[in-house]
Image 1: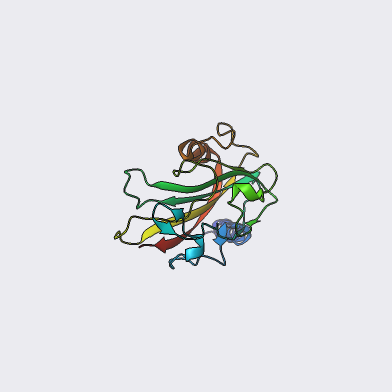
Image 2 (image 1 turned 90 degrees about the horizontal axis):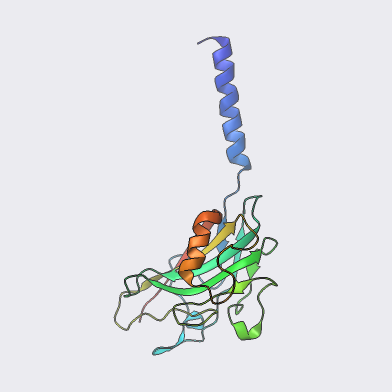
Length: 188
């Protein structure tokens, strides 16, 4: 190998490792829900035969790409016996300066979401957080809590709280820079 080729190869390897070391990756955590653990009754839905407190979990995230202009948060149950899963929480247009949501922020009556954020319609038929409530006797369902780093400040098609989860998901498909998921389990 020539000295030039070796030098070029070494330079490329250095640049690649420097880029990887400087790259951030989005991470999502919650003091209320641990990865793979059972979700507490505090977060479980109150209704449909469930007797939880329906309090949204506290969430925080780090490592968003520099180009992030907003965030979105969803909770989805792919195990729901519907053929299309079940959307439990859909939040979008969270300002890029926001890196956490406090416990209970999903209650629209409390008005504790950051200014500009939108909580849209869930599969319960209303906006705001709706906790786990799988059918009695089902295996524990997987509740996927996902934060999305978004490349626009406001989603272009999902305008307000009447936006369906599918419409928000459509926008997120085209505008997600990074995402992180935390999965909790719940059965009854």
